[in-house]
Length: 73
Ligand SMILES: [Zn+2]
Image 1: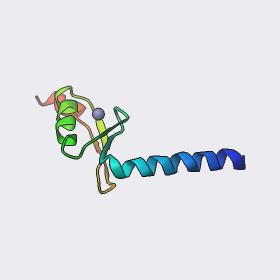
Image 2: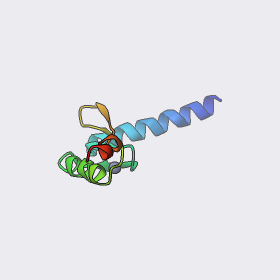
Image 3: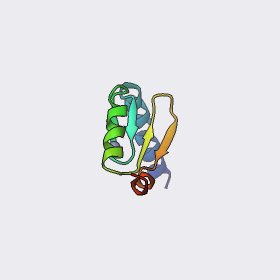
């Protein structure tokens, strides 16, 4: 069990390290995006009426629910 735990911690450390180089993360696509490209990427989800969850450079995570807009457009 201890071994598994340390493996997980190592993975988290790698993930945190890579976060320094890659600014934003789309949980929906499981992909990293440059902070200048994330707005465009979010618009892509909006255009496709897809929900998306994005973590920004400052660490804030937002869930955008575009499915709801479908009814009004
Ligand atoms: Zn995405």
